[in-house]
Image (tube, rainbow, N blue to C red; front, side, top):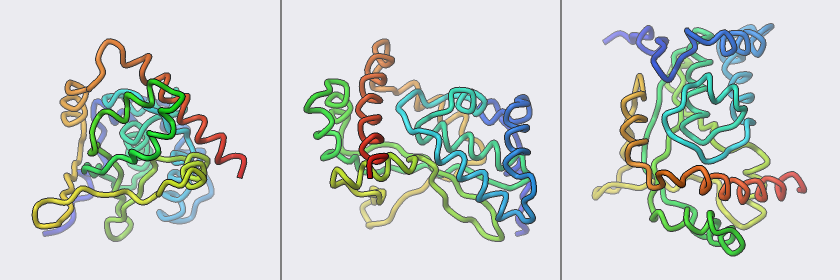
Length: 217
């Protein structure tokens, strides 16, 4: 079956590059002078990856993430997909379960009640990253910015995603053209409800401490 790239170039309610002049203009700025699809991808990916990571809601529009200038795995991946599609590069979402870095949250939770509450969510978490078409599907994860990665390493954590396997020992990936429905349903299952703003703000202070450690290396 021939590869239908047009499916992976379409906007959606959350992947709203068709309605956001800011996304289109930023994409054009980042790709000006690029001579190939691979160069365009590299420029866009580098920009989105270096936006600071922070906890937030799941169902944000790509334009909201660009406006705020930060996001968690879902928001940053959605923005990446939106910008890639705006540049004519097919991209899709990949959803799977990972094991939480409990040791890292334990260290943060010693002086941060919100971080301690995040560690109480269980051993498994949902994670979203991106697959981009560059002659074949290539996985790219824009979730953590470099300063955060360096801070995690300095605290003794690992950067490798610990993927949760099924009973046969295989990772289970859900690949989506649009993640609007998944994000809406996931948002409805949020662990924190009315108090989530305060919890996120407190946890994000802990994440910024990690980032500061990374900047000091």
